[in-house]
Image: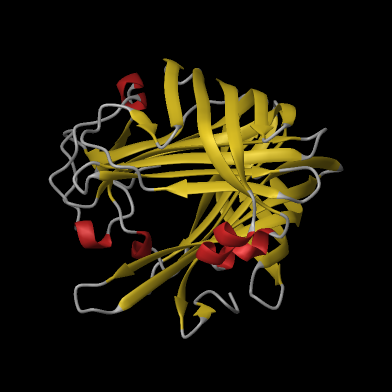
Length: 342
C-alpha cells in the first residue's frame, strides 16, 4: 500500500529490463527460489545488472538433500541492460506475470559444510567445483505484490542513490518444475517458491538489518514475512499471506530467532496479524544455511561489511508443513551483526 499522495504502479512491461537511471549504482535484479517438499531439495537464483558499473552480480545456490550446498557467485562483465543473462544464468519472460523460465549452465562449488563460505576464497580452494545445470519453469500462483511507488501524477520520486536499496520492487508466489544437475547427479524437482524483481539505485549497506521469510505450504497457502530496519526509527513490518489465490496483507509481524555461536539463525517463531484480522503462528527450523557477504569501501575510506545468511527452512503452521527460505541481512560492526538482541 502506498502512502497518501503516492501510488503503486506496475505494468506487464516491468517484467522486462528498464532504461538505467543516471546513478552509478543503478541495479536491476530478478530473484527466484523454489523448494521441493517431497525431495527436500531447493535453491535460489539471482541476476543483478549494474550496467553503469559494467558488471552483473550472478548467484546460484542449490540445497541438496544430504545437507550439501552447490553454490556459485560471479561478477561477469556486461555492457548494457537489455536482458537478464550473465555468467551462465538466464531469466526469460515467457508470459508477463504468469510464466518465466530460469536456466543456468556453468560450474558450482559443492560444499559438504556450507558454513565454509564464511571464508569464500578458502571455500572455493578446498571444495570440489563441478559442472552444474539448472532448468526450471515457473508459473505464477498468486497476484502481483508491489511495484514502483510514484507521485499521484505518475512522476518518479527523488531518490538519494547513496541511501537507496531500490526504487521499485515486486514479488509473487510461484510453482516451479524442472531439474538440477550437479556433476553426475540429477535431481528432478517440483515445488513452490517466490520471486521478486527490483530496479533503481542500490547499495547493500543502505539497510541496517532485515528478516525476510518467503515460505509455501502448497499451491494455495504461502507467506512472505518482512521486517526491515534502518539505523534509526522503528523497523517496518510487512508482507502478505497467500490464501486461496488472494493476498491478505500483513498488518503486524514479529520474528523471534534462535542463534548458534556464529549468530546464524537456527530457528524462528513468527506471529502474524493480517489486515483482515486473521492470526497465524509460524515456527521455522533451518535445515541448511550458507553465509554470504558484500563488502564496500565508503567515500571516507570506511570498510563496510554486510552479511546475508541464507537458510533453507522447514516451516509449520496450522498443522501444515511447508518449506522456504530464511534470509537475514545484517551490517557487521565490531565483528557482530547489528540486529543481535532484536
